[in-house]
Amino acid sequence: MSGTLEQVSRRKVSDIDCDKAAVGHGRLADTVEDFCDRWSLGVENLAKDAQEISGRLTECVAVYEELDQGAQDRFNQILQGMGEDPAAQ
Image (cartoon, rainbow, N blue to C red; front, side):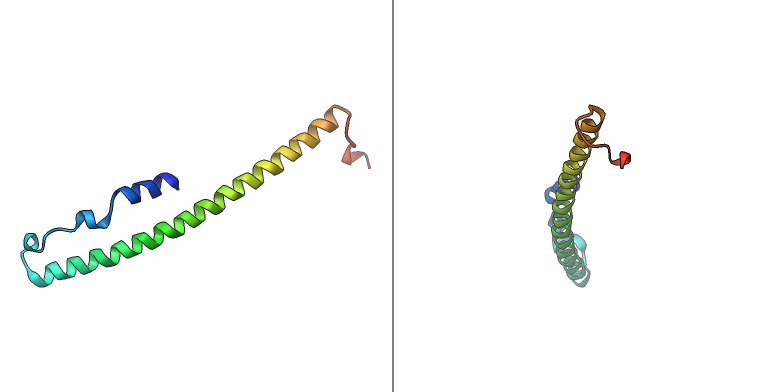
């Protein structure tokens, strides 16, 4: 997600905006400009949402790593005879 967000930040919708004279028709140029403005807002909103998702996923990874480490430590204690075997009860 971070890579995608980086690409989005490097390529702005405004980069594809062209001069109205290049379109060749005033109303069409206005429509293209309006479309690009709305598209730009949509991309910005999606990028903000993606940043939030990315942050939450990063937090989830940290929790999973902590739980995995705890399970590994407990299992190692059992194998080394230092901990209580939960299956022995």
